[in-house]
Length: 220
Image (cartoon, rainbow, N blue to C red; front, side, top):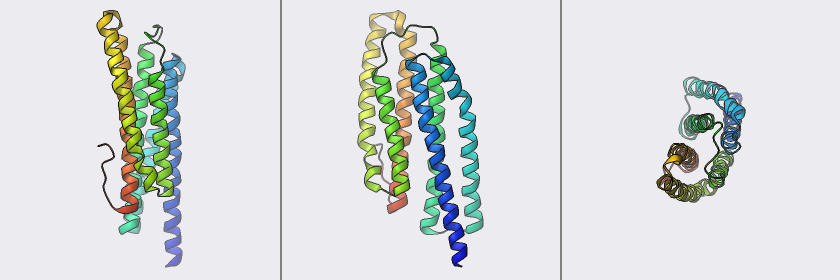
């Protein structure tokens, strides 16, 4: 019985490590997508777009392992929460990667166009979001509910920057109609980053549920 338990614990630990590897890759993709936009680096944007397949495959592999653990081990209580939490986290990570691809596609669309303004707030918003993803994954590894709950405040900060950039870009569009197309694309980028932050807070919610069994709303 103890050897069976030991094997199951090892499988759960391996599952967690694979989720962390996927999360690390997603953090890099978020960074590269925004970097490609700020530096108008189309080749980097193409790397982000093509690399999405790797993340999709990782999600499917981890999903299969979660399902096999449920089917073969018939976990209950805390063990089932660990597996279901991992299952949901990889869904959030995959969607973050999809949003990063959307940002990279904007880089491709704006290729060769002078930016209407240097990008300062969008990279700042993205850096905060990357930190949210990292904190969410750290909270997951450590079972740190307090760290998980801090994602709510960071999400509010991201929302604040988003509102600020929205107003600024709207002013550009009203003052000069020639900026409308590019400003609209940049607004989409802000929205994609804001969605990534929402997915990061979802991870925080998963962690709170994993540790306490409660279902908080950190996006409120």
